[in-house]
Structure formats: structure tokens, C-alpha cells
Image (cartoon, rainbow, N blue to C red):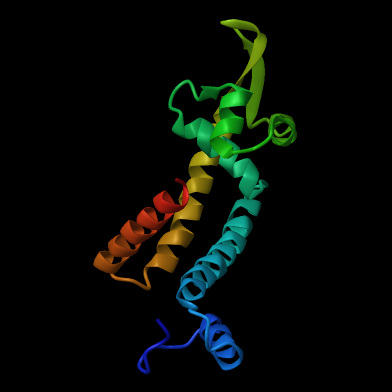
Length: 169
């Protein structure tokens, strides 16, 4: 699976070559794929962090706002639903909710159906910010994906979906 002569080389190619020199017995095909996925995720994560910072939020805080936004009107979920969707502990979620509430982007209120429960709802300001930030993030992702034509981008999405589903079994 190593680079073809006509292809540009990336840092993963150098790592694979180094392993081949010292451990020619290793099959590094998985390293070539996951090394690139990791590096791409890290590079795009850094870009997304900068995009969301322009709105005064972190990527994790954006995830909370985006989850509420995607839930549809009235943009309300319980802290437990948010934690489950974002795979966060309740303690981690509480910190994010505290910061977002102080910023006026969401509000917590008693759940009318459960006296012990809370509801988390986007404010108008939070709704506007979520819409603006998702647009900024998608613009960065679209720009990065423009290195591939539409058919290859679709192929990549299909392959990554297949791989993700196989690892989540």
C-alpha cells in the first residue's frame, strides 16, 4: 500500500519506510491508513478549534450547541441526553453547560415532566451562534475536501463509514 512513484509523499510514507528498513516483517498497511486518519483528524481539529474560537467557544462547546440545534425546535434536551450523544460524563457536561449558560447561549430550567430533572435549551443568541459556527466549520471542511473530486470524496465517505461501522461492533 506504499506510495506510487507519481504520488506526492507525506510524513506517513517516511514512517512506513523507516519501519520497513528496521522491521521488514511488519505489514504496515493499517499504519498507512490509520496514520493518515489520525494526522488528518488532528490537522482538521486544529483548524476547527480556530474557527470556533472566533465565536468565543471551544470545539466541545460547539458540540453541545450543535447537538441542541440539530434536535429541532424547541432546541431542548436533558443533560443526560446531551451526555449520551456527546459521549461525555455528566461532570464533563456540567462544566460545558455552566460556561455556555454564563455566556447566554443556553439556559437550564426544571423539566416539567420530571421534578428531579433539568432541560437545556438554546437561547436565541445560542441558536444564531450555532448556525454561524456550523457554517464556518463546514466551509473549512469543504475547502479541505476540495482536494478530491465529488466522486472520490463520496467514495472516501463510503469507505470511512464502512471502516467506522466495523470498528464499532
